[in-house]
Length: 317
Image 1: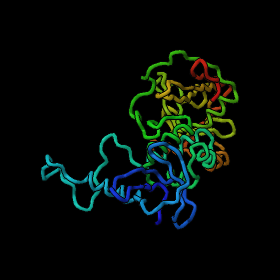
Image 2 (image 1 turned 90 degrees about the horizontal axis):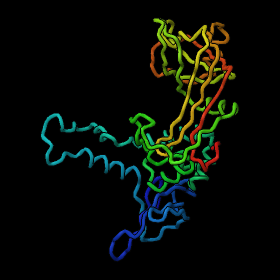
Image 3 (image 1 turned 180 degrees about the vertical axis):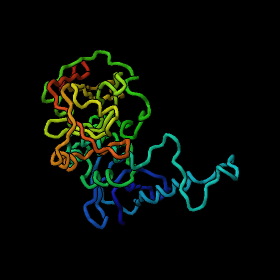
Image 4 (image 1 turned 30 degrees about the vertical axis):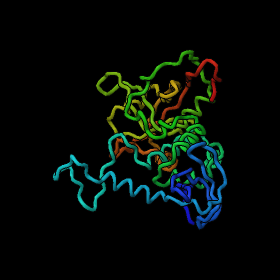
């Protein structure tokens, strides 16, 4: 018997063939995939060390995914030959609203980095092996509901968020907390939160003289907020002025969130050595694409923040 991380262990009754129990293999003890395995059982969410007996077999993740894909590609009774028919040798487009299995791993990795957690610590909190967490983050996978719930609890988020639920819905449309508390954040916490994000909004006076707020991809380098743009663009108008820069995060499922506001002078970085240093140290690429080689730096002189939490919860999380 050989298994891979993410495979399903199924234990059946030899007499009837009826499935008695199944679980997700979340830990291997031998590199060749031979038993024993760490299994998270789907009926209890318990993790146990299992030495499979003769009434057990492995359902491999790749085989299950292939069978599911074939089922999705098969035309239904109402399909007609034409634009709805799948071309042989091509893969079908995922059903609307159905997440790409790889999206789960990317969201797990992003939430883990956002909270400053190592893979080892996250795996320990979720009661899975670090190797399995590496597999989830780096390979297309579809973890069981139990594992997804465990990861959500470890990352202080929700399973729906990790699956991408509500990704297209504007934030803030959920219900407010019954007893919310609005807390002021200190300078240290503001700087920490500011450094965890990659997209913020800069408020400027546009070249046409009108006020504007535009999103930019940014990084924090030596306590300065830096972003790339093009000469003559709206974000470039920040240079030479005192501007406001804001980042926030909304946990829609929990009706919680925070925001940080930085105010300070913005300048264009022109020194060649400084430009090369920023290009080397800043890893965020402008999502808008195109040539954007003008660096703007904001040095905050005032940094404030707010966090909304339940009244019985600590201000810091």
